[in-house]
Image 1 (cartoon, rainbow, N blue to C red):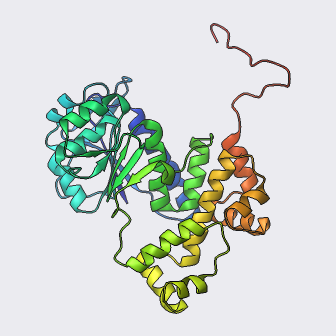
Image 2: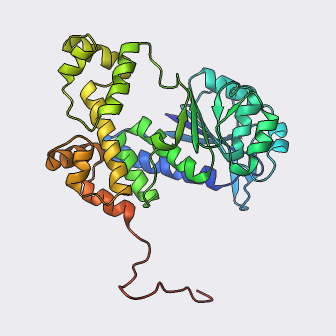
Image 3: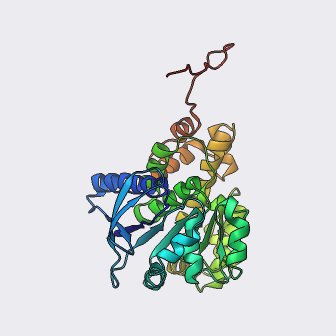
Length: 337
């Protein structure tokens, strides 16, 4: 696995360092658990050299090499007007086309999305960018379908994140894609304790971004999304959509890469995760809300998927930085501390 972080002038170091550290943490855990090799993380630019970030931290890059393809490419967030940087690194645009055509996942943060827009890859496709640049972006790139109300957009293998926080959520999604749900949940808990909206709840996806060619299975997926809280008998679902159970299982796996049961469990666990982080429902009530009458069964599945119990997950994402004793006011920091 090869990952490239593109460097340039005016970049925000956080948009490089944060996802790089998250990915290294995921790789370390995957290596310990599965004895997998570490991904190769590279810092590249149109010209080799040192690129000082807005913080003053220097970052060293090697020159991009035509014919070298990556599994994942990050484009950094930029400070202030990105257009001089885009013009200065025009050689990056055909390289992005090459990576896109090779099937690389490409994630851009903030005004770094302008690299994708300037390349033409986002023409007639959805995108988002930092809130302060929305009007200018719309004026410069009228062919792009700007989605300002979304923090993340996906168009095939092109991803846009409006902010550094959204980039962290997107990185968790990439980790889930490459390393699995358990490792993604572990990294998310260690880098972001607070309860947050899941990737699926903050992302706009092109109609065909999750595409496969089996229209019947697409309808089944929509039905499962709508009925995940209800008792579901997959044999009945197969009959409802005019398939034998054997044919249903075969077609579903061929279209989605997973079984109908695993797909349904994933929907329910993700819904349960959101409820645990964003509601005061008991574990039993959360289990019932996502289709499980037996809370112990829900707990067992939750732990299998995310390597943590629902109770411990809730505790980790809702813990507070400062504990305040009843009846007392939060302490104020003192000068010089």
